[in-house]
Amino acid sequence: MEPYREEIKAAVKEALREEIAPLYVDRETHYIHHQFIQSMIEWMDDAKGTVWGAFLKVAVYTLLLMLIGGFIWWGRGHFR
Image (cartoon, rainbow, N blue to C red; front, side, top):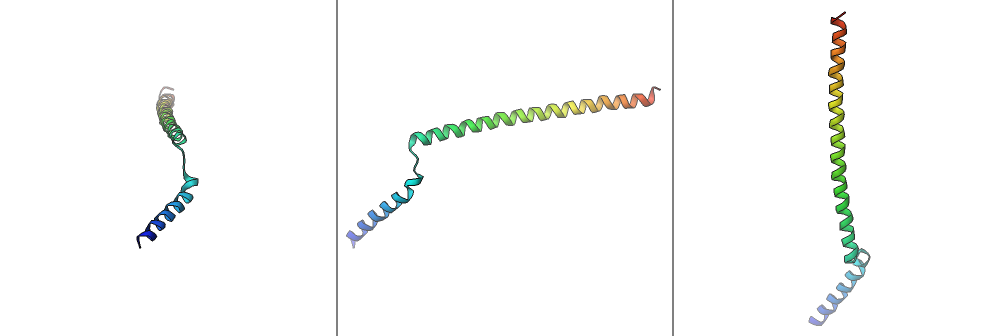
């Protein structure tokens, strides 16, 4: 029984190696992929900060313009 077990293990090992071969990525390529992913994460964080900053500026400027416009509109009705 033992010789068959070793043959089966060898056959399964070889079959797995053949099936997994297309998915194998060498270390250098894998490392380059991680560097690319890290740079994309950093870029997204920077972009997120830029978008939020722009959104807050627009919100503040809009509120200021509404406040000034409201005073002008109110003043036209009361100071004529």
